Image 1 (cartoon, rainbow, N blue to C red):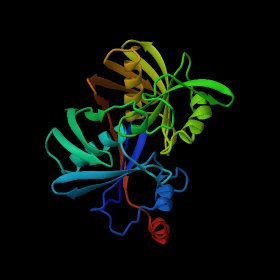
Image 2: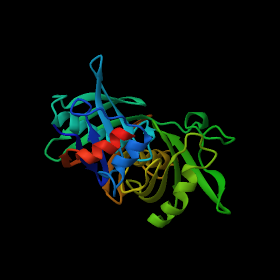
Image 3: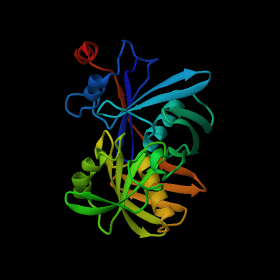
Length: 285
């Protein structure tokens, strides 16, 4: 029996736990999620993908952040889980659907040799109550707020999960570490938010730094790439096909009317079993 599988999408790593393959009863409460994801005391990851959960011929799974919360959607997590269900024979077609907390996601395998997978992330919205954001405006575009005594211009979008985007001439990891946690937990975001810092390179290329809700600074994020692209597109900085450069690598985003498609590679890392003493800690929680 295998207790866990580990994959990554451009350095954004996830542990897949398949309930059908565990040989003990695992309760994925906040304490256990934090322990498994801990990079010193656990396996270490940017999150857990728990599934498949099969009901009425639909394959769903949970996306669990390392802080114990559940995410609505994850572009890298979805592509990773798509590769997992292919690897384990749950699906045999190159086109299929998966279900997350945010609903149905369409999957297409573009290249099996490189594990290049295309995902329909869904529709985007800048409407404040759909994100949600507590600001006195209808669309959250070019809105001014104060952070650390300085005025900042933010844009906010929901793409199955909430995002806050700042377009800058210069971006860095230090900037993400400085402003990311403040924005994630800012009172205007009742459900907290993901944060992206975006540099426009040209009409076909952007570069981003990411602070992920519930995970912190990350090397790559699929929904962050889509959120940043949608914002740059709606503000007329880019065209509808764009390459997004992140610390972990590049993905490709296509915007067709209100629907956003994400294409990128995912990779297998390992699979293994939990040690008996580690299982005792999980069961104790």
